[in-house]
Length: 383
Image 1 (cartoon, rainbow, N blue to C red):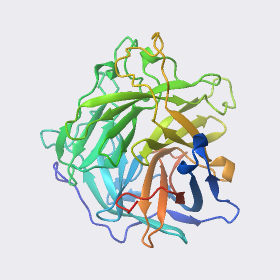
Image 2 (image 1 turned 135 degrees about the horizontal axis):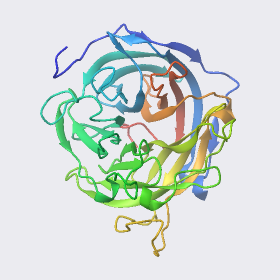
Image 3 (image 1 turned 90 degrees about the vertical axis):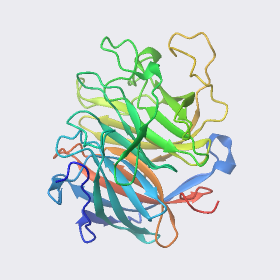
Image 4 (image 1 turned 30 degrees about the vertical axis):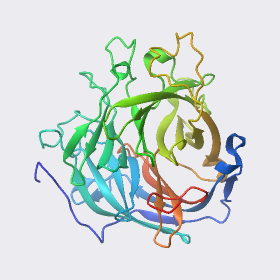
């Protein structure tokens, strides 16, 4: 394999098995989120594709899908794996997702692309932890959580379609990890979220609060996650907003069982509205996945507030309104970490969700598709 690039065309490589839309899964419509009826949104379930852990794609295990986005220039999707160059080089895939108003039919791998560092080499093991990916005007934007030992800061990169590094965005100092855990990002709760607004602004968010901003979510408390707004032209960070992550909605079956909740991905609907995925895991129960619409209008710019937990200033968080609960409509989601708007072949505007299997035999790579309604359309569509 070339150290510079691995891209395999696989037009006939079909992943997974398809479960067609269940008539018992009713459409969900939120007519007036935040009391704003102009922001109405609806979801109609189109089906599921499951890819078992251990599925091989041209000699490399497929999985770890942590970010997904639609490329209007090709009509395909790009999906990033959160493999830390362990099973293979850090990489993303180009996928052909066959979906229409009649249902989600298949997911095919078109090619695999290795992400390269500034020297044009594949990232060494544990140098990056890819988490989110978006198609931007300049190229492909992707985030890394960082973390580990030694401490590696989270980062946002811009790459060309063949994986070559173009540049890296500047990181505000308050996000840098610290060994004594008094400030900065928490391990594995960092840059999970990435969104690209029509204006060109790039939004990046942590999964839960920075150490200096308060606690991570618990059963009786939420968490204050920061969203950074970047100027995509200069790469400079601008305003920061607060997203209020909900308390853990489901307790583990045992007192010492794994239990969490966090912001696992976000998607810009326009320059002020987003969809945010909150993902809960409760050991002995599984995952709860909820989608919230977020409105940044009127939210406080907290870029000059060193600590949300210790500030005396009045802070107004972004407003949020729940618009979809996957379990409440009869689905059994896995570890959903990716969200994308897309345009189906028949012109239908669709929302695609994807689950990260963590390369675990106890989990699966899972794709859900929904027809999306309201005023929201896929990238590249007339508005």
